[in-house]
Length: 245
Ligand SMILES: [Zn+2]
Image (cartoon, rainbow, N blue to C red):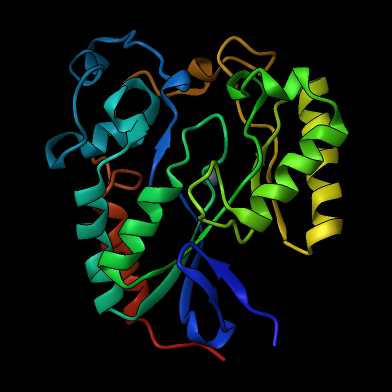
């Protein structure tokens, strides 16, 4: 039987259980931070996400720099506990090069929480890509990726179980196209699936300005959605729903 590669080694698919297919236990999106520009945003710039500001952060998640950085191992283990207790068995962590993947920490979190974790590999959007994407040839990048898949990420011994998420912008950059070709070639050699997140807004890019699309004031009754902790509340409700079909 084909097994799924997790951060603690291969696992039979039926042993994964309920699996979240796109998570980021550790991630650094601070390159997307936009300083507060409106009075209601001012207290948020350096504020940690918490219950008191979660509604405002739902309106604009990118105005708080701490909200764009997930790097707390203890908190991550604590947040996975209710997921595991409620029947969650596994998740896929798609943090790739450019937004600070932490494969060794993923293994520690998996060991301590008991939740299986499938780690991604590859490169995120152009503005986050390390210099090697431009300097190495496609063939060299394929060899590097295939080697990571076979032997582990960055000398950690933690092997990826999926390629991605690969990030692309609008319009796509030449190096992002290069990374897509590299991912496809590595997929053909290894058989791993690929996840691609297309058209991610970039600071200063050719996208329509995000701020123009945003509300100028918070809604009267802001509801939480994106802040850590809240996601698990939603998840808890989902896991309690009876299965359909
Ligand atoms: Zn993602």
